[in-house]
Length: 237
Image (cartoon, rainbow, N blue to C red; front, top):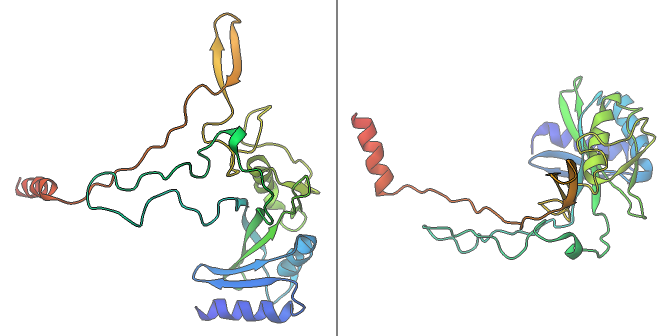
């Protein structure tokens, strides 16, 4: 780990010595997991404290941990030819809406923000989990970093996370009247409805999806004598 990462982790641990935040270090940087009730409080401290001075929030997004750690690809028995990495059963999103996983999962949805300190030339990731008590709700960071306005709208649209205190929380990417949140892991990859033009009614109508879900398996083209000969011919010419 670099000296900059170690120093940042040390400063965070000293400043939040009461265990307010959980600090994790990796090759990607430092991540602070913050309780949802302290989300805005810690964000303001990270912005205003001279030791941190994270003036900018570069990005904010939602995360769904429903199938975290699960794999739909066969990778432990890969051959050197053919389509050896097929889909195993029904992976994340490969099921119908009626067959979605319905059991409760603690800490399924999270909000993740990427902070930048121009003054100290370093970055920090902060994260909090949205408690699922019938409605996913996390305090808005718009008063701390006004630039998160559209980021929070995007997380609301795609994950269904409500940002309390947001001045204009509405969908930003999906259509009017769209049902569901398409970045949730239990949202069908083919969607729920399709749009067609009805000749009899003379207008565009919505109807249930009529296509079957399918998965395209990528083919890995490996070097063999055929490609080697073609390359030699190209070089010779």
